[in-house]
Length: 261
Ligand SMILES: Nc1ncnc2c1ncn2[C@@H]1O[C@H](COP(=O)(O)OP(=O)(O)O)[C@@H](O)[C@H]1O
Ligand SMILES: [Mg+2]
Image 1 (cartoon, rainbow, N blue to C red):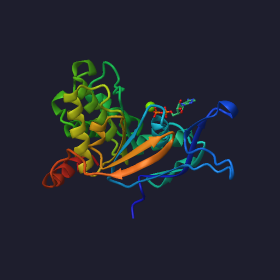
Image 2 (image 1 turned 45 degrees about the vertical axis):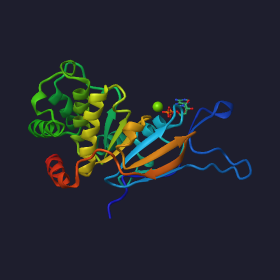
Image 3 (image 1 turned 90 degrees about the horizontal axis):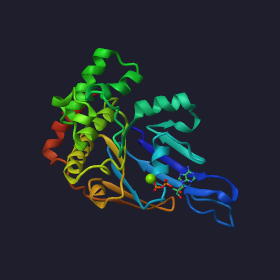
C-alpha cells in the first residue's frame, strides 16, 4: 500500500497570542470542553484537488503548511508517509525539494536565465550531475511543450509559456505532488487554458495535484473540490472534471511522463 500523499490530522494554526490571536485554520474553541476541532484531510496519490474559499478563509495558510513552508500550531502532517512535524529546517528543505513541486501565481522565474537553466535549478540543489540535469530538464520542457524554447529567457516568453517553464521546474524532480497557488491568476484566458490543459494531462498521467483557486472555471478541472470557510473545510465533493485527455490517450501521456522518472 502506498501512503496517502497528504495526511493531515487535527491541524490548527493560530497567529498571535491572547486578545490578538487569529485562528487561521481549525474551528472555534468549544467553551464547555475547551476543545478545538482541527482540519482533517487525506489526499491519495493521483488525485486532483482544488482548494477554494474566499479571501481570509485560510487557503494560503493551508498551502504554506502543506508545502512545508510553515508549521502548524498543533496537529500532524504526514507528507508521502513522512511525519514532517519532527523535521528541522534543513530536513524540511530537503523534503520540499524532493516531494513538492511548487507553482506560484507570479511564476517566480529567475530573470535573464534560460528556460533550461531554470528547470535545472532544483536538480542542482538535489546534487544531480550536470549532464543528467540537462537531460532531465530537456525532458521536462518537452513534456510541457517547450522543447523549442530551451534557450529563451522569461522576457522572451508569453505568460502561458513562462508558467509552463515553472511547471516543468516543479516537475523535474518527480515530486509526490504539484502544489499550485492560483497558477492562472496572472494569465489571460488563452494562456489559462494552455496551463490548465497541461495540468489535466499531468494528472491524467498520475501526478497528484493540489491547486488553490478562487475561480470556478479553474476548479472545474479538479476531481475533488474542498471549500474553506473561516479555517475549516466545510465542503469536500468529488466531481467529473472538465478537460483531461480521453481515456484512450492516458497511456500515451503516462509514457511521456514516465521518461522523467
Ligand atoms: N502572518 C499572519 N499574521 C496574522 N494573521 C495572519 C497571518 N497570515 C494570515 N493571517 C490571518 O489568517 C487568516 C487566513 O489567512 P490566509 O490563509 O492568508 O487566507 P486566504 O489565503 O484564504 O486569503 C486571515 O484572517 C488572515 O488575516
Ligand atoms: Mg491567500
